[in-house]
Length: 285
Image 1 (cartoon, rainbow, N blue to C red):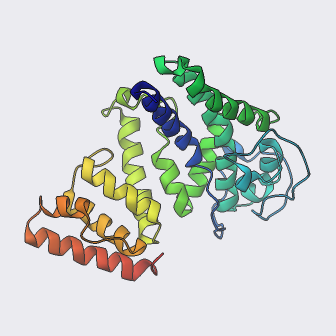
Image 2 (cartoon, rainbow, N blue to C red):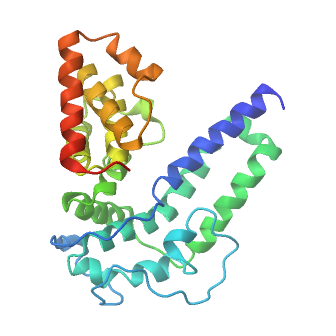
């Protein structure tokens, strides 16, 4: 297999990973936050439970990326069964609606943008990707919700403290900002500045609850200065905490690279902060 083909496969894999990120299953979180007026009129089953509705035997070509979330339902069927719970203040139900609606939102966006890549013309590389997109279109055929609704449900979840919603929020630039062409995002745009600030705040809150995804993202963001001002001491704090929670090697090459750029006092402070985070938030995962 030649280099161009390998690069194409890797690129498409990364794009599909953007869809997969939203499709994990998480435990329910007690709800206390009502939906904003903009989506109070959502219709559907008025159940107060965030448990997915029962499977109804509907057929789809595949469920490669979403079967754990939707079961045998379409997106329209799934969210209809959760509107009532979300409208009643169930934060986890709101997050599950966001996740389901993201299945429909991501595939067409990625499909359009991949056409900009010359390697997408390779039929051998593109075929399986296109088949997945077609399957997603099938499962979304009965859903016609808006992008604004999807973002509103995410805001309910992240403001209500659903830990996994913090990582989703960090992947969702403000409405109207292109999150595929990240190089085009204007760092001086007030909306982007506020989004980054909010994202770091939500991730920090989730990290304090032991969410390893948020801890890992904070480690990377503080190391590369992407979403917050570069701070290698904080990067080391979150890197050590993540390693401890995952029982990973504390003498890894990456940790050694970070410590090599810090003073002994900074290393000691970062280590102490990591130990405090782990002891206060959680047991090892």
